[in-house]
Length: 170
Image 1 (cartoon, rainbow, N blue to C red):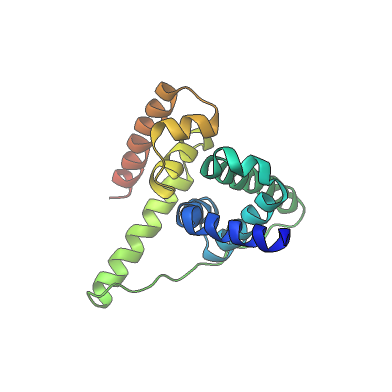
Image 2: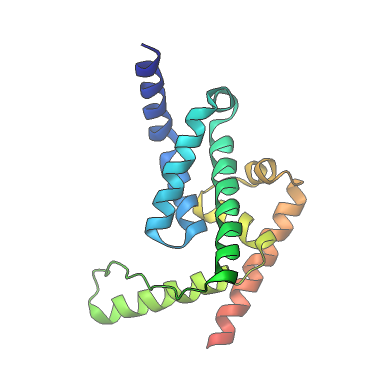
């Protein structure tokens, strides 16, 4: 009976917060497959700690995803030092405006991703949480354990850095 109750609760949790957590995982990972893996691992980890979910579920899920991502990033960096790999490019879905618009949209997405990826982590994470997970500034501050003013300043700086990175390419 407890398993059934846990399954129903997890389904409700995914229904309520799944979209925000998925967007956050995708924006952290930059590839669909890695983002989906991170998303699934986040909810699996959440099932191990149901007491934490009762308090602030979205905050717990996002901080769990962030922790898992950082761990994977460290693991990948160690592996890259030993045996470097070449990244594979991922195709995007074509917009309705035809091939020219699809190409422009794809190029723009690549440029924005590259500009965001080039940001230092301290600026990239608040930007990703704000736009990717659609969190409010105070929620980001709580999740990252930072003052609200620091989050606002980092968001502002990150936007400027992305804009400069995009302007530099023109």
